[in-house]
Length: 120
Image 1 (spheres, rainbow, N blue to C red):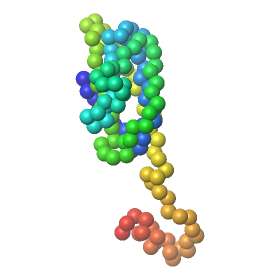
Image 2: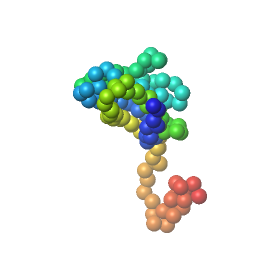
Image 3: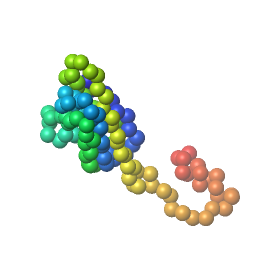
Image 4: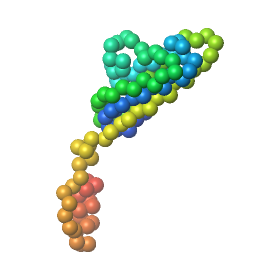
């Protein structure tokens, strides 16, 4: 099964996957950005575990739309359903939203400065 994981605009710095007890190596997942597998990096492999949190540090650029990853999962257990828990750390680079230079404005200058900032 493939599921879209919506994110905010930024750079994915870390992903944690919690495999709860009972997965017994019968459950797996992997991550894609566009059509490219980004984790694990050796396609077509999967993360597979049991009673463990798998932590991966990386830099995946999600500065362009769509702001998401796609998670592929499978469950080969014919008796129980399993749920994986995924945490994603996204950082927004400082260059993404540059701040205008600081300066003092008079009340008369404020309306024109605001129009300039919003592009009107």
